[in-house]
Length: 187
Image (cartoon, rainbow, N blue to C red; front, side, top):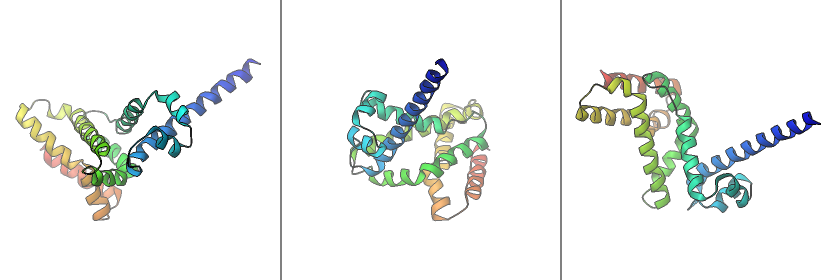
């Protein structure tokens, strides 16, 4: 009897985790598809009830914060390894870059999208500072800020768009060009 109950609890936990992930993915999708991110809209995209969303996240603000945290976790990379960091970043851009570009086009007309994009810009800056920290640690504050700005531009989603969508380069070629750009910035 214990084995059956353990199996049931494991299956239930796996199902809850899958539902939670589906809700988070629906939240990210909602920013690109809905005029305003609501619990009802997210629930509909995830195929669950509003009560299920509330049970998992408590409220809309917590849900949005968890979705942002999920996006930050996707691009986690060890500090001091630019090649690996760019590969991780391009994994995320390949998955979410087109949606990000669409959202950026809406930020001037949709306040909730503007807030999301501002959060994304802050997250990207934090990512650059963390990933390149060992390389830029000995610089003066002014030189450090200038270098961070250049690294942000080199690793920005618009740079990905120019290389992958506009120029139609392969992912491998686009990553290679960004690695070269970052290397030159760091010289």
